[in-house]
Image 1 (cartoon, rainbow, N blue to C red):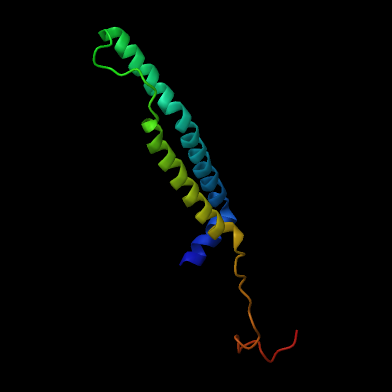
Image 2 (image 1 turned 90 degrees about the vertical axis):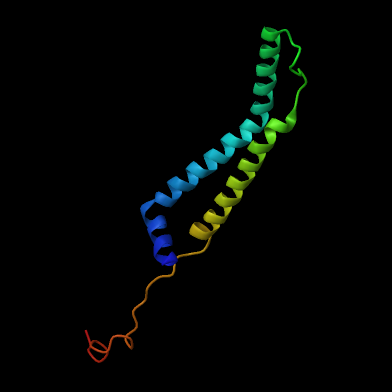
Length: 109
């Protein structure tokens, strides 16, 4: 069953498109590792400016980057496993032996 799925993914280019999309998502999450703390910092500064700054901390916090870090890492691991399974191992070709088909075993062409 998995061999047939692998053959379909390789021959129809669906696997290449899906792997490209998965890799692009991993790169987007990687970029958000740097963007999420900055966006949170800006939002907290603006909120603090509007409310008078009494309840909001204006320090830069890297905790907002952790979900994006985990997402990026897990997507890259999944991408690598699928890439290795689909493209690094060659497809098994179907060969027909003369001994496996007894009707044509004794005939000469």
